[in-house]
Image (tube, rainbow, N blue to C red; front, side, top):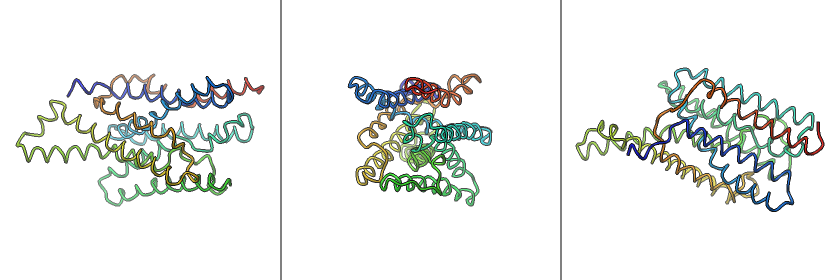
Length: 299
């Protein structure tokens, strides 16, 4: 089993960043070359790879909350980047520098998803039952964000009391995925306790030979498949009110293959890399935006 689980958090993070970048390049190609067939095809391929990014990032947040020694510092860093992205969205709106992307950034800020997912996991793992119940607050916010965007999409209106720069990107999907990933360890513990009772084999042996890690990974995959399939069915049943693309969203299930090989280890984690991963999102978006603006006669 140990040979099977060879991907550390470092490599999952690298892959998530690559998939995210491909997704954003795919959006750029679609906006910049809407009538060039080869660019349209390339955009579709890039966007398919991009579907794998969300489950990986949500999983990494779940792992981050499980292992961090300072949750306040952890969520503060996510919050700072999220604030920078929201401010950029507001500036793009008022300066009208990037009008072609209006529909994109009105669909949400992914760092709000990450912050609220981290908060939900932190609250649900708290020993105090009253604090646990506060998990309903980020979940309620995610549902509100989803409902507002759905109403705006289905009726071609703008709801001003819930400003777009507060929108999550994947709403309840992000938080439900994160909570599911967190509880995968609990599911694996229950399962191995059952096996220990039935077989008489001490649970520690399963941990030592890598079977426990593999069991956790199988539950991670189960959570991923159930939540993403439910999302797809939801889109299928309510196509006019949902802003996600049903034709491409199901490719996110391919991320399950990567979760299967997760080793449970952090891997390379130098300070420059940690800082770089937080800075990468706003920087690469800024670079793509500047290129697009220049190509279209701006600046």
